[in-house]
Image (tube, rainbow, N blue to C red; front, side):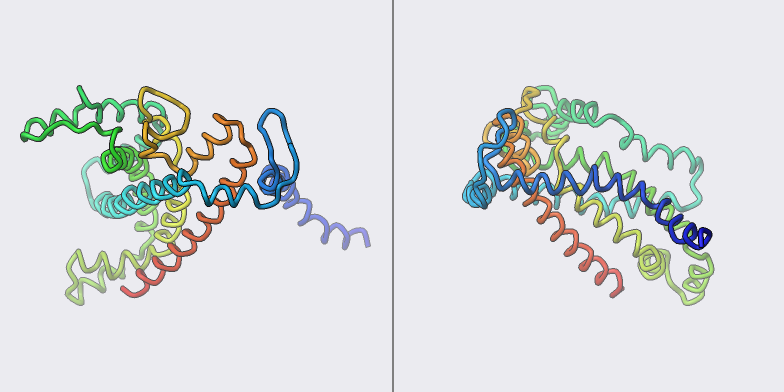
Length: 299
């Protein structure tokens, strides 16, 4: 009897730490945030009373929220889509017989391990209005300098460059690991059928690493819609209010959340934004998952 009880209880004891940690650091904060979003909650003074869905109504009526949502989607598209395609091409290059392959494979990960603060500060100088390298290069071809943080399109391009530079190598190594697991006899069969290297890449490599592509797409979607550190550190003059420029031209949803919660101390509104962002991320992740799976499967 005791041995049978041990056999039934032991597996649950092994997995119990995960569920305990998830309950404490996952489920409880999630439910607590939902509870706060239904209250008039000040970050310092605490709960001022139940107000139902008033925070949600106020949020959807706030033009700053919709501005932040548009900025987030814009930054997500122009940073994530090129990033994944570049990473796929870079992985294919690293999968060939390059001289010093180990050096190059390790080198592409360097941008990801460098502190995001250092990266943002360097790129803020690169895209500087008066002494930035990019404006200097534009001047060489006769173009006027651009005040990168001051405009919507220019600030989005600059921030997208930071994100792409940081995460392309990381995704490339994930793709490279998947490519190395593709059986070599599939490439030999493709060559015997007369397929070129380009065609073999799209007909053999890409379909075989489809699960990895799906994984990076979903993870990049989640990260892109939660973009925070890069635009916050890119903010003019090192400000940390979360407004995303003088005219909110690159304020993301997470920056808007930061402004509400830690600048205005409106924890109830910040919790509401967090839950809306959670739903947005879930919807986009599911859409990306379905689209990429269908696209790759049709090749």
